[in-house]
Image (tube, rainbow, N blue to C red; front, side, top):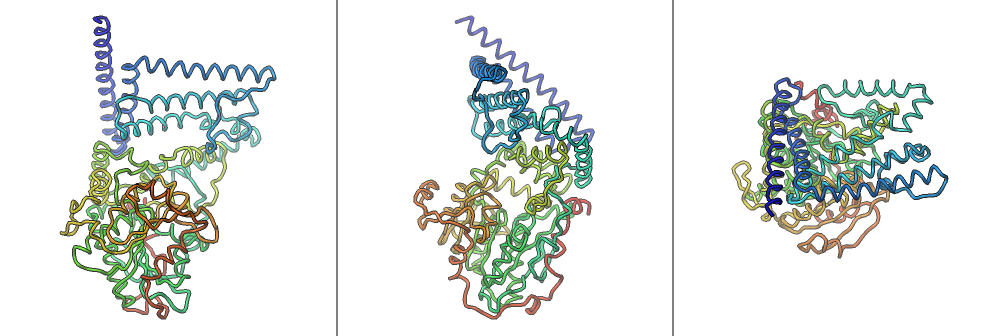
Length: 600
């Protein structure tokens, strides 16, 4: 017993000394990186969290040697199986590979990986090692769920970065292409890399699409309309009718300001806005300004007052209608819920119905982005916000890409820079790289009060423009659309938000993810959706009793909104009301790039 006690004390002392040494080295490195300007506070905070995660893994190794030894034995057995497979291949015998990529893992799909034994063994060894490492991290003891998720995230970034597919010498497909093209693929790849660096000054993002193939107003955001109102935070677009009569009540769309509004107005066939116009709706949409440091003090309540509230007043001037239907998408929906609760306290009722598209009102499970939601991370972001006055939209895009790093970063790295392939022209990926900055005050409030403290669903916990708000007091009928594979606004969490919302609530679940689940025009007949007239307390119970329907949710929503749309009236032409035309749609605000806004 004394021997075991002595051993335990010795291990504890070793762990403490190890932690002291590593932490001191980490602090010295962070100090040097900060002083030399290599990294800003947000990146230093991420580096610190990453270092903490790897240090905790090393400490677990020291404190639980038996568990580590057991994992090593399991790993050794798999490598023995790989050795047996290799021997069988060398002697011409059939043998099943001990490790195969997941069905959706495209890194090793090329025949070159399986045709040549050294690369066949290499990629299987990588899969065995990376899976063993991730399993070991996932089975670490005594970790809260958030801490485990964060460790798994950083462990996954490490294993993904070390994949043999990311390096020319260990990727047989790249080696073959290099031989066939006499090295021109690497020259073309270097040119593309330099162009991507030029396109993103001071913040590298891998190129995801052919930027030259698209232009806002030429082949994106082309639904005819006019800007009829603007202020320092947004432009309001009124779209030209395509029918002789329209619904009496206008329709306002509040899009996210983390990205630009034209995700709802891509090519004509994909455009939700064009479809709405063709259904006889008088459509207005907010086009948010891409902010720079001059808007650093604009907060959440400014976005409410200068966004949907100002838009509602402008729509009344333009159409003469005092009541309207409103759609909010993503964070635009979060703002819509805040606005409706504020209007209720003010005893104002300009909204007839509210539609929430993949919207978080309850942030108890923020999805993949939750690995960054902790006080330490937010403090680092806030220090950077205080210094710069804004969060660079390109950094936000890069962060979201890391949630699916192999699909949204390393695949483009390999294709663009190693194979020398020019990215395909893909409108959604062009939109995805066309980010917007976020004002310091608003973003700090959003991270702390919504994500970290989850105060929006707590009655009277938030105060906006002098009024405490309570979502349960909202009486406006609401339609919630969520997407089953959404990793940004997880559907079960959006369901919790729908339960917190007052009034008559209709919840619908679409197939696919955060974008494709929403942008799903009827002609495609894809994905399908689920409905249920009941709203039980548990999301799984809702799904178990739901009815599945084929095709797009758009026509179903149109049926739902029909009772709130009013009678048919003559079509409204932008500029014929009290609001004069300022400029043609899509306006000038949407054309400002994140880097241009930051430099203003």
